[in-house]
Amino acid sequence: MTMDMKSGANTELYRVTSDEGIVTVSNLAKTTHQKGTEITEKLVSDWEKTLVTRGFEPMLKVFLERMAGEGRSDLRQKNVLRSHEVCFEILN
Image (cartoon, rainbow, N blue to C red; front, side, top):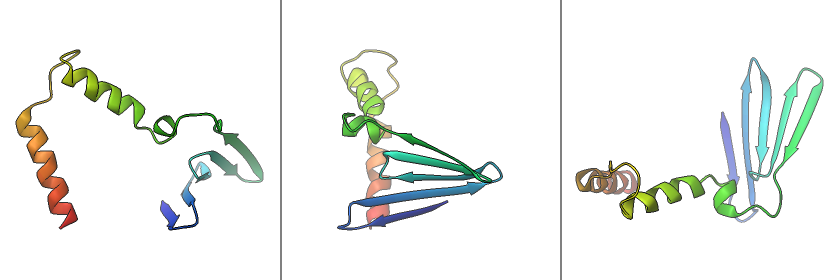
């Protein structure tokens, strides 16, 4: 898999090659699947929310539910602290 994100050009391009063919995702809005000579395309609606197209909406909903005490209570302070430590290590 390769990822091509060109700063300032508003272009994101992801390409995966496998035995099933080549799948290319452009700007998280257009998916092209090529197998042999057959090419299919799928477009995401321009009206879709950014949080949905980027995949963040479900994660944020669950997080907010857990913080409000709804659903399973598997958020632990020690785990939250460790996640911040890992992010800090990565950035350094």
